[in-house]
Amino acid sequence: MDGGEMWIIANFKANKNIKESIEWVELVGPKLKMQEGVKVVVCPSFSAIEQVKKTILVGSFPLMVGSQDISSFPKGAYTGEEPAAHLAGFIDLSIIGHSERREHLKETDEIVEKKVNQAKSNGIIPLVCVQDINTKVPDGSFLIAYEPVWAIGTGKADTPADANKVAQTFKQRYGEDLEVLYGGSVNKDNIKSFIKQDSLSGVLVATASLNPEGFLAVLSACID
Ligand code: PGA
Image (cartoon, rainbow, N blue to C red):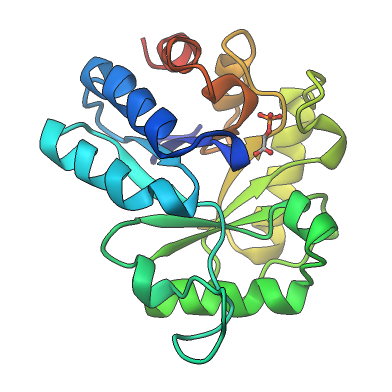
C-alpha cells in the first residue's frame, strides 16, 4: 500500500444465515477501532443485509456493508433478481464477477460490465474480481480484486510480490488510479505482507473471515 486507502473486505460467501451474520457483527463490531484510511467491509448473503446494516447502525460500528453480487438488470420484470436500486441505502459496495459466479452461474464479462453499470448508477461501489491479467476490467471500474482461482480456499496464497506485479500490470493498463486488492487464502499470517506491497490497496478475505475471532486476528495483524 502506497498511501491512499486500505480495504479489508470479508466475504461470507453462502456460509452464514441471518442469525450467524448478526452474531458475527455483534462480536466484531465493538472491537473495531476507527482507523484513518482503513475501510472494513462485511459482505453477507442478501437475506442478511438489512439486519446486518441495522445492527451496525445501532452499534455505530466502523463497518461498511457489501453484497456478494448485484443484478445486471434494473428493477422490473426480472423474477428472482436483486436490483441495485433495492440494495442502495443498505450497501456501500458490491462484489461483482467473483470466479465462483463465473464458473457456477456462467457469468460473462458482458454480464459483469452490466452489473458494474447498475451498481454505479445506484451509488454503489463495484468491486470487480479479476482472475488473472487477461480478465477484462469494465470501463469506469476503479476498484478490482485480483483473485487467482487456484488460491481461493486452498490455503495456497499467491506470493505478495507476484500479486503486486499483477496489480502493477492492471494499473499500467487501466490507469494508476485503479485500486487493486488481492484475494485468495489471505490469513493472519500473510496479510501484512500483502498490504505492504506498494501497488496493493487491501485484501478480500473469505475463509479467514468466517470466525469472528479469526477475523479480528487478521485485522490486528495488519492494523496495529
Ligand atoms: P479465501 O477466498 O479467502 O477463502 O481464499 C477468497 C475469495 O474467494 O474471495
